[in-house]
Structures are given as C-alpha cells and as structure tokens.
Image (cartoon, rainbow, N blue to C red):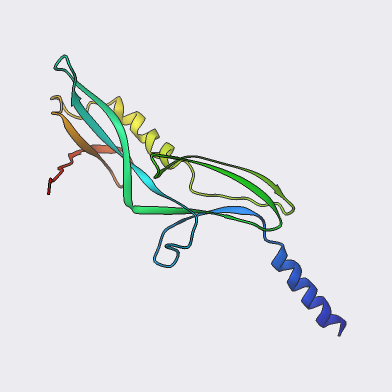
Length: 162
C-alpha cells in the first residue's frame, strides 16, 4: 500500500511541477480561436514615393504576412510570470518581455526577433544598389534567395481596385 501511495504522491508532484511560462506557436486549425494574443509575421516592402521636389524617396515598411499568424499564450504553474508585449499597428509583435519567479529552472526559446531577423538582412540590402535606374513610385516586395537568405531583387506589388 505504501508503494501505491508514493506513486500517487509522485504523480501529483509531477503534475504540479509545470513552470509558469510563455508559449508562442504558429496558428493552425487545431489551436485557432483558443485564446491568447495573436500577431502576424512582418514582411518587408520598399515604398517609393515622389516628394515635393520631384525627386524619389524610399523607405522600408512592414506589412503583415497573413499566412503566418502566431499566438502568444501565458501559462500559470509553479511560480509566476509577468509578461509584457507591444503590438505595433495591432498586428506586429515589436517587443516582448517577461519577469519570472520560477521554482524550477527553465529555459524558454521562443520565436525571437521576428522583426529583427528580417531587418538585419534589410540593413545589408539598403546599402546595395538593386537597380541602375531609379524605381518609379510604388510598393515593392523584397525577394530573398532561399539558400543564402540575402535579398535577390524587388518585385512590384500590383494593387487591384475592385
């Protein structure tokens, strides 16, 4: 009987041993609508506009990649976690932080630097002349080489008006 009691106690302790933490997951059919904070992966575009002097100005803007939606869930458990998130324009995760008081050591590797990983590539791309001729005003999508991860070109985005 003692062995059975210890098994129950050990099982209970294992259940209670879960740490408080943060989970970030890509939204799928299985976890859609289950609650949490939803955001999209940002994708870089080049916006080219004519200024008042007739010259062309350009800047990198980020728009949501709507086929890459993610959800953040904060889980309670043994210990506490105070999580903070900043969403720019209501969809782009730009800052994430947490303070933990955990009873069990834990390492959490989440999706980090959604915007910074892309911006590191863009910083290299901004110093490179992608075309000899100035681009006409419009919105352009950055195209990346699958093998190297570097920018290989720009593709104009056509906006249809229905």
